[in-house]
Image 1 (spheres, one colour):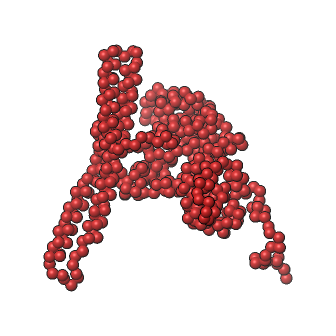
Image 2 (cartoon, one colour):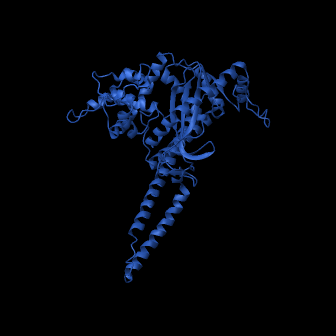
Image 3 (cartoon, one colour):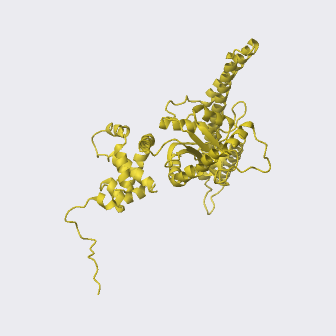
Length: 460
């Protein structure tokens, strides 16, 4: 008979083993820990040191950061699952040094130091550049719609808010009248009618709708004020042009003053707050509900009760409440060199802000940039060329080899800018460069979509 190898899972070790030996030097957990040790975590450490020295000692910021980075890298996003992994998974136990932070501690660390953790992106990107993983010879831009933590059925138009307000007020009056009538009659076997709960529920809904209506009005008025200020600035530029006739200059100055006056009035009504100096996303396109000339919301203007910043969007033919997540990826090793999230669905106006982020993050201008037809505009082509980047932006459908597919119905109905870009894409270099776009940026969305979706749900 064959004999088996000795097996005793309860056998204690005579000498303690090294957990690192269980993983191997090329394990992802070891790489993450080595990387995090090189990062500058002083922003987190400063807040921890500012606390009262008495009480329970906090976990090391290196450990907590490495734990989150590794967990997200292997697809573990739940704080409870991360806590359980620190007990059951060798890699997690190695990163935590045998400690087991409670899931509430993990969640609080992620929430409290969200901005500091996000700022580590720049440090990681510089490490990738130092390792030769980013060369900026070609970057690809793309966006994807991400679901918010809100149902599209919780969005309501301004017109419906007004109509529902009238309907619910009538229902409240009817319920109160019914309760008064029931109190006046003799109690029946089932007892008196109690309308308190129904009235309270409707009154709470009235208060929510009133708050949403006022927030929507404030948003549209602030947006209208911003547009008026932009128009006033354009009028002042025209008035300052030496080629403008003196009579026209005076008119432009007068119109600019009127627009500024109207903008200040609308801003006051909206209770507009000045923009924050630390808002790094102020150049991103924002979707604002439609309004009339006085900044009042149009009947179709919508607002979501759960997540007011999210918007109705379409992804793969499905309507959802969500955001538009944008990334720029370097083709050398599929490293993300810029990322942003906003609530405007069309991609066109993201092109310039995303390229500016690449320059700000990497300190260099990419040689080439590719993007699909959703990003095409003459202004985007001019912007890229002005900053020194050669743009390859689709003006229609393309095959996998980068060859443009001519639309048979409208072969010659292109603007000069489109015709010029089509000519570029039909060259050998244009086809070869654009063919890299799909294999550069789209796989990255497939890899990070769960993490991005989780982050958006938590943020909203």
